[in-house]
Image (cartoon, rainbow, N blue to C red; front, side):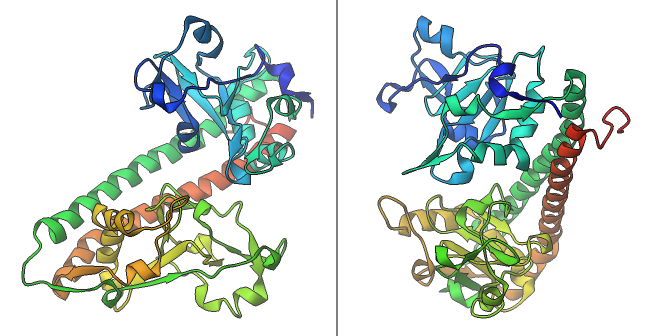
Length: 401
């Protein structure tokens, strides 16, 4: 397979973005920041972003064009450094901030979407990790990025690979819209049943009367194993209602099923971050397992009956509960919210028959969300498995349907 340095595929030299302090932001041109990059694989000028004043000279060097690749220069965590996104729309003028690197591809030499998929794949991420420097934060340098050697099949092959992988992404995007719609329906129903129509005679009880919760143990670096272990979840694994264990560390099977056996997660457990960004949650599925809890992540499940599951899920993902977390959390550099706070929370206890009826109506919606997440997981794995085979020629992309 032909490999070339990334710099050989550029139409203009790579560039870092603009430095715009927060005090001058508020008017001007949209600016893509770290938040937009980490939240979106595909970035559009129609998204909400900070506005910044930009000079004519800065416009000449720092405007973003459709199909530009953007890389994160820095991240608090190793796996975030070098994260790649692609710009899909430039109908409005946009610039980018200094923590990002812009790579503009010569489309006569390479397909930007092919390179985007490569850098999103396990192989591409591994290539990026080879240049990550870890000091206070993980980071990459542009001069190292452009020296990376990337597989470069013929341009028509690249186009076809991007087209095939794009089909997977479009299905995943459709599923994500379905998940978002279902999630909103559950939230609306929970609010209608248990907030807007709450009855005075409902008893107020400790949260622990209805909901079991447990924070994970503090696992130390020296306990990690590289092979034949059980992965454990951390807050970085939870994002957009999903659990991504691709970069999770492992402990030995003996420890997982021994001293930590009571921390092993089960299907339908609701896991939630309790440090840093509060309110991130996901539902554990069979295809996540085996998986162990870790500190800064709390699992929740009904304490008494699975027929309370929909009520528990509705409450844990409600604005009401998130507000309580924000109010009660402590910590200055990084907020923390844990079992000590949860034991102080009281909630209204609707009649059991009402909770059962709510579960009968809402659980099919939750199951549909779980099914869509599971399909996305399978599609992502198939997509990542196909890429190296298509690059190597093991799969003839022109005969694939």
